[in-house]
Image 1 (cartoon, rainbow, N blue to C red):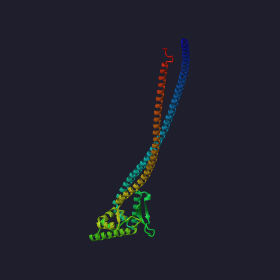
Image 2: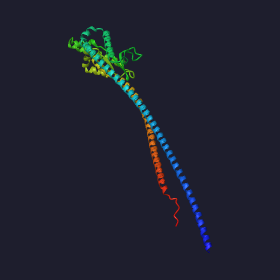
Image 3: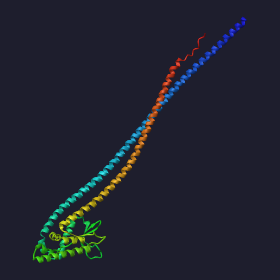
Image 4: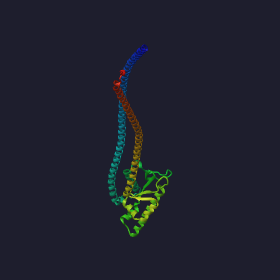
Length: 376
């Protein structure tokens, strides 16, 4: 009984010794595995940190290059845009300067022409004052007619452009009668015929003879004017070719005033669509016509300027569309850059958290006890 107990004790001790040896072996292997895992984890973490650092540097370099490229393109685009805007501004300034210069030149020419007309008007007034003396000289009807035609032509040449009127114009090719002058208007030709009813008017102006003789001379003067107005109305007012009225140019102011004193005679001329004019009144009409011609010319220049401005506006609108597209691309690039920047920042935060967690694991590792438990 005692022997069996001793043998049992010895066997138990041997079993415990074997278990202890196995335990020590397992502890040793676990220690080695822990050291290996710690080393590999440290190496992997170092490699990961190096790779993450290189990735972060490369990402920053790539973003930096992208930003520099965008800034360079924006600078180029800005220079191009400023160049185009400067070109458009210079073109508009050039056109405006040219137009203003032409208008000033035109106004200067008008002022000069008015001064010339004022001087000529003074001469005409002097001529009208001496019409009584001149009437004694102009006894021949042909000479009077030639003088009236010459005076009419000179007035037209002094006021209107050369292409705005024509002298001795045949309105109807079938007719052999040529009107002394026509003014070419858009609506048709304005006919002007010189008439000089001086014979009977001279008796009235000088007041010679008895009262009966003066009445007879007045009737004869009225008849002369009516015949002249009738002739102008029938010959030189042609529908679709001329205006519906014509001018009867009377070279002498005194004769013209004699006609204007007779209201019925003047109304008769107007009913026949014939307007009597003297040198002074005809100058007023010519000035109005000249202003119309200048207005047409200015209107033509204004249309050219308007067409140029419209073309420039179209170019600017197309440029504005292109500029808006470029701005949209820049905004998209800026948005993409901001998104990438946020992602990089979040990625960096994740890496930083991983690094902190790794350090926490290292601090916890030394607290693990690998010693066998105390024997009881």
